[in-house]
Image (tube, rainbow, N blue to C red; front, side):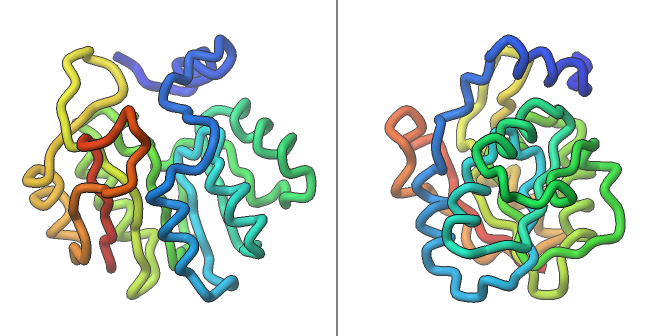
Length: 193
């Protein structure tokens, strides 16, 4: 399966985005609520419709950078937040992103959209994109899927093996506040460089 720009454009054009819950997930909202430094540099990769962007922006965070391979979800964000800086909405392949370093990277369904063969490259890239003491925070599925297409699942042991060479695992535990359809199937994590 070729999960390229055309694949994702088609998903957004035909509104085949079953992963999109239409609002920020409760675990990410709870994490953001405890952040106090509004100046931190934040990346939301593979953002899709990126409801985290709305939430952060409404709370006064402005150094938010959003990347997606497809233009449509970025346009959706701009429609919802007309004052969001155009230069911080970037259409490109995540793996082509170079140079900038971030204090916080938020993960919400991007990892599970990547073919498992790209997971090591993802972990390495995250290490390279984070400032020292920077954090990768988000949700990972704690279950397998047998459909051969996104979402691709996994488990805690697999994630520990994958990320330990690159980042320090501060938290990796069942999410207590997942939405009902994902209850018992998500792990909340905080990894630090």
